Image (cartoon, rainbow, N blue to C red; front, top):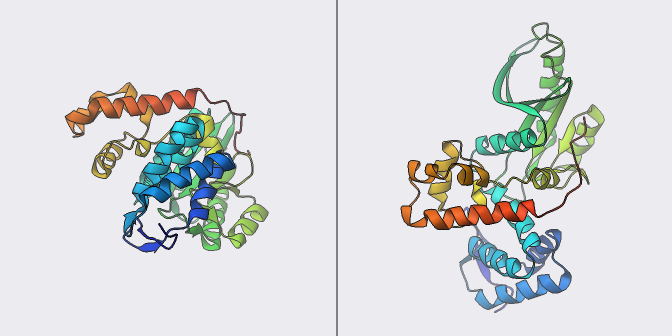
Length: 290
């Protein structure tokens, strides 16, 4: 099959299949060059005009899992986080759960009164005596970046809260994070770091980036479970079932929120498998910069 095969993306758009792009994703997940080539060869065998990127991903994940389970878990993580869309609220809740797991006390969707106006905060986190406010920016496509305007807005809001006479020393935030599941534009990153914003994207900074934090927390979103349909995942997340761990610890919610009864055992088994893989991994302590 030629590499000019047209593939269909999740949003309905089409593009030419790019093996280098897939290989890069596999390499970043921890597959060796030889292992990536084995997976690519399997993908070449199933290519046809109009194949969906979702089918390619599932096949790549399946083949990588046979070769190196830990790499397969990392490979699936980015896609799972991307699947938290289309709105940003599930992503916001998921990231707050990650920070909670890492030792922070978190609150989601707070209203805080600044000097000039009241602000809705995506989530607030406390660690020791420090208080942090976070703005999360979710994008459901890899190529979209959080831009300079977002960083400017986040800094202006933090300044308004910092100057607020309505917040006491015990409630006033000491720092601000801007967290995205993709990347920042160069100008956003330059300004944010100069202005004192803790900029966290999928792969920035080198240590303590979003992928690191999720893997350190050993939490995977429910969207990582391939046996669930898109509608089932959406329904679960709408009812605050955000993590694979939520399903394992409260399996009755599968029935409660309308997951096909025939799939309950398969879904539960897949969630347990993901958790087991997470528990078998070793990571450095990569707490975000405070």
